[in-house]
Structures are given as C-alpha cells and as structure tokens.
Length: 188
Image (cartoon, rainbow, N blue to C red; front, side, top):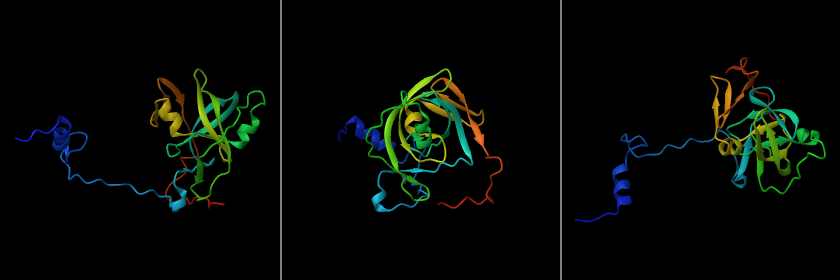
C-alpha cells in the first residue's frame, strides 16, 4: 500500500468540495472587473469617489473635521489635496515618496502628491493611518488598508461602521433618490 503524507491525503479527500465540505465540480468562476484597463495599468488602484452619493463617516484628520467616503473598492486610504492644505503647518504630516498609481473609473490617472502618516480621530478613538494625498471630489476615502488593519465591519442595516469594537455612525448621502433609471454624470 502506498503511504501518502498527511497533507497529500487531506488535499486528495478535499478535492471537489467547497470550504463547507459540500461536493462541487471543482471548477472556479472568476468575476470579471467592470473597469477596463490596458496592460500598462498593472498595480493601479481604481477610485470611484463622488460627492454626490455614497457612504461616509465623520472624523477629524490632524484635528480638521472631514467626511470620508467608505469605499471597499479602494485598496488605499486617500486624503484630498484640499483637506491636506487645510491642515495647519505644525500638524501637517511630512509626505514621502509613493510608488502607487491611482486610476479613476473614468480611466484617468490621478496626480499624486505623495503619502504620509495621518491621525484619524473618530471621537473617542484615534488611529494612525498611511494615506496618499491626491485630487479628489470628496474629503477623503477610507480604504481597505485601514479597514483590514483595524478589523472594520460595515453594518449597512444598522448604519454603523465597527472599527474593532468601536462603533461609528454611517452617513448615506443622496442614495435614496438613485435608481437604475438615473444616468451618471459623464467623466471629464
């Protein structure tokens, strides 16, 4: 009798089963992204922020009150150039080099001003987060990097963003009037 090591036996017994142990045909379906990009866009982050509608949280960044969009499609946390310029000189973080490329859903690259370490104050809780400064229509975007690092959970039905065990109210802006018949503004 052939002796397989334990990892080979487990792998063999799990073939054709999903994570719950249910038998499957073993195929993998991949979701295709809606945004088309060219071959030289590898590694570019796609941003789709609009001040017209979305899910936001209120916070202070370096003691400046702002509203950041919650965007699970943004891998990086972003701060608008306008907000960065509002931060008093003594509290404004020094910006370092960034190799990130940020692309809007309009297929345009955003001009990056660099990245820095920012203090995000949600009332009772304070967090430090890396963020890239760029031109945005919104004050900023709370990206997946922050949400993953701080164990965030978005509870849309309760209008709450859970940051670890801390709760922050979610604000929904102009989403009640949007439906399938509404046409989006064209990209500039």
